[in-house]
Image (cartoon, rainbow, N blue to C red):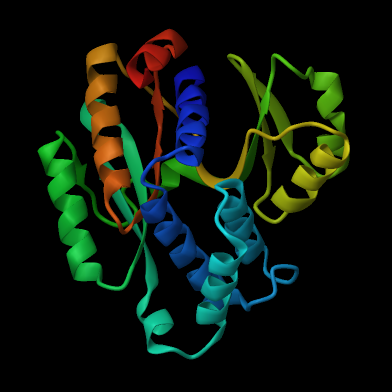
Length: 249
């Protein structure tokens, strides 16, 4: 478990300072557009949109870009109607289960790209439903365990959090997707800095992998996330935190 959380924390920090920020903004804008199209353009009435906008703000996406993405999703433009979300299911090295979230205007192109990347890096594409049951959709808030202790985080429980788990040097605060926003706001109002907050497909069980398999798996995940259409990649691997730190460095 520690490896997975360390991986998530490292990826979040990397995304904020990513030199390819333009590509990252494109993905974030697509997610905002889809959320606005599916649930309306008011973030206060659309939890998915609020979370997508907050994620964009965390990445320092300009306000104008966010507003344009909302307007595009709220309108009737052909470009918005052509964008859709697709969840691909597959396997990585060591039998690790993968859920690959994509936002695309061409499912044939994206499907072919995902299949190619999986095959190239020792993985395979699965059938719909082949691994989705191994994950549960939850809000996950990451807080630095070296700065705060569990007593400090009780405000999260009061605000509706389901659980608090310490994993290496971070706390993971788990919520329902709907409660992610009020729990995050309660933490921030209490002066607690949030390292990361997102709705994630959290694995119910984890597959232990050795360093060699972990290195191959991370190369696969990086390749998938470099694809313009792929938003998030969720995996159920477990690797030692020291190994993860070494590989990520």
